[in-house]
Image (cartoon, rainbow over all chains, first blue to last red):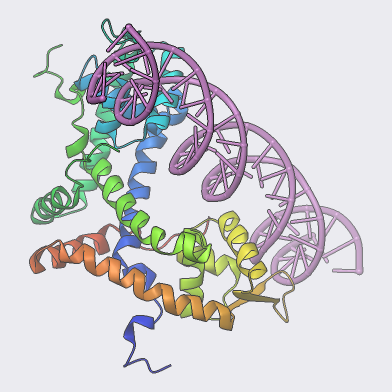
Length: 154
Length: 154
DNA sequence: CAATCATGGTTTCACCTGTAACCATTTGCA
DNA sequence: TGCAAATGGTTACAGGTGAAACCATGATTG
């Protein structure tokens, strides 16, 4: 194996490989947040994301929720089914387009939202606290840049 | 809703919430890499990670692979079962401890490794190319800092 | 050296996820 | 108008994944 002629073939150092590092850090952080509410509220990550976006934008359709959560429509459909069954989201059909649903949080949904949102923010603060102010600024800048800007509808 | 008294209750702006951004960026990048080899080699992400670590450290046990890949032992066990069945990894039992297995890539395993590793590196380069050199340095620094340093065995 | 405990690894189960197929409704267009 | 294509949403199916139970082997300790 002529290592200097084909350095690309050298074994990857996983722990310094950016996509791997991103994956580990992301999963660690997300898991910590999820642990805060999964068992306590019987609420999955996808369900929480749907609730978070409905808290900001009342009356969205399922498709619009999918866009704003970067989830596919199947995942949204399933999350909504559970949330509606649990009485956390209300759903009725659009007046002039019977395919579309009109979604929003119920009082019970808002109650949970108002308890979970602070916990999520707290975890974010804990993450930030592990960095210097300079690093915090750079991380925000970099992530803003790397985020897929918007998705042409699939 | 007294927004100024309880700002924590305000709806999360998902697209500016760090854990969410991390999750999106991480999944996008990982998916792009996985698409390079999943279909072509019938190789899952977990299997690739196992192969990558065995390329660097020959003779590890399954438990040691789990440590170095941040996967749990069940996932490693399953990945190994497939890799051994496909003739990509050789496994024999440790001489003086019959519980432990001794793992390594076969010639076929090395062949795949030497094709996939450059593709993974290429994707990493593409990710880096979306940043300024300054941002690249900061991202590396930040991720190194945020990576869970080592895990006390679970 | 026997009983107990710890360890490496696999299997089982229940759940979550994505893809593709599907149904109902609406839109586009001849 | 009438029929094909597009759209919103759900269902079915096939894998992937983690927690807990399990089996075999090895270490500990009385």
